[in-house]
Length: 106
Image 1 (tube, rainbow, N blue to C red):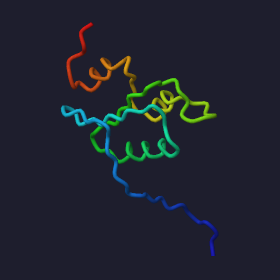
Image 2: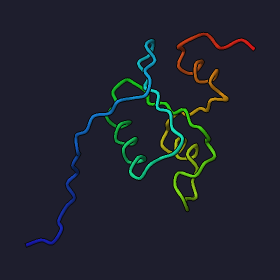
Image 3: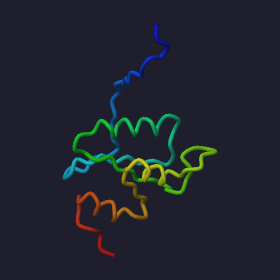
Image 4: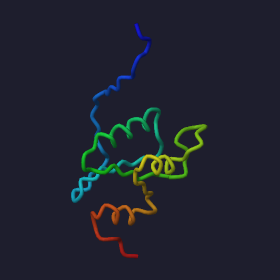
């Protein structure tokens, strides 16, 4: 017998309901003030399940730590995982990114 001869990937099927959808592009927009335990794995799995849609975050504070004691911020985590992120202060850039609407006039 061989002990632990290989790794077998598996998935757990769940359903995700995005906070918002950009009707023009189909992008899914998730608004987050903080990540709960397991959220980072959940969002990576969602990202990996997408075909043509984009998962985009609107963070309350991109400089907030992913979790207590973490060295990485929520914005840094998004960057590391290749996920676009914005804040309410940069909502005009979000709209421009998604091409949902023309950029807001100042």
